[in-house]
Length: 205
Length: 225
Image (cartoon, rainbow over all chains, first blue to last red; front, side, top):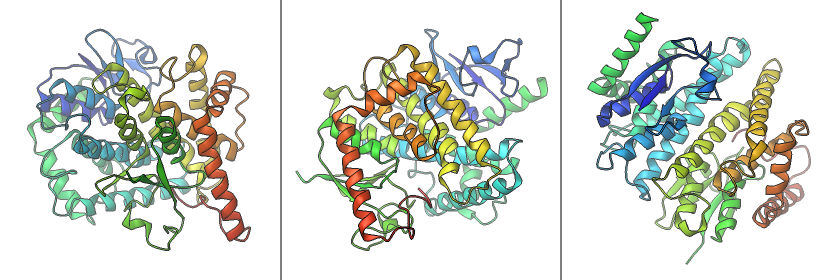
């Protein structure tokens, strides 16, 4: 399968999940600002929304939305601890986290990435994010990962988005549980390999 | 069986959950939350139900609470797999429905309408936020050109979700007439008996609020959601 991705985008979570599962993916790097692939072709033809990630399935169909792609991948390996079986409360709890991360955290960062966002709103967006990060920090007190002792797809997503604090100089000092969590996730071989692939893609660009 | 409790709010995205429950014939006990003050009708603290302070939340039969509308809708539909309101787990149709739910929750609700609904949003950001909403509504309109519902000819939980959020155009004075496919879609869904009943419940609660709260002192959902 082929994954369309961009360095420092939420597509990193999908690459991490695929590596955790041992599912090989062809990585196709996208210039998401210019909406171009490396060969110059139009990315809107791949994903009409113009966003990454997109996963091209073996039959050529394409699936979008990171939180959905990671479920699709994890469901290929039903015995993996990355995602609980469909219909269980554990599964809904993981989805609950992913929905929170996708709507509150991820979309909370989006205005900071847009050059057109005025300074007054940047301040508000940062305050909202700090409030959410504080909440995640509190949830992680006494917990190794978001839903308990097991690393799941929600952690791959959460880690990816929380790392954007670096890009926007948001100081993590007030959140010790979150800091320890980020360090814990970063030490996983899947995460190191996915981040290394991003570095190489940036160097080659 | 005792009905599950849905923590709900007038003009909240929790409307989508009520629509889904009515489509499925699952009775819910509607508990109206004062979201700005985080208070329940009996005066107790809503943070005890949902530490995030948002609606919807669903109290499950085991006493636990499930949050995030997009997830609650899946949970409810999974209780009635024969309804067809959401495709079976593991099918491509299911991922397609979830794809829409993710887009609606992130790009349309939080990344779209949210800043417009908040009083604190500065005037110089409002046109930008509005532009994002308009671009996405136009995209939805194009998608609906040859489809009755988001994923084809069948109404699913994604449509309940989409309808609920797109109807916020009314509160924001965004005219949907430039998008005839979207307009027809809203009309089609608005005519469903589940939607009529869910909106009627909302209207009755809004009316009750008008009577207990003097005009101008409080608006049920202006502060945060």
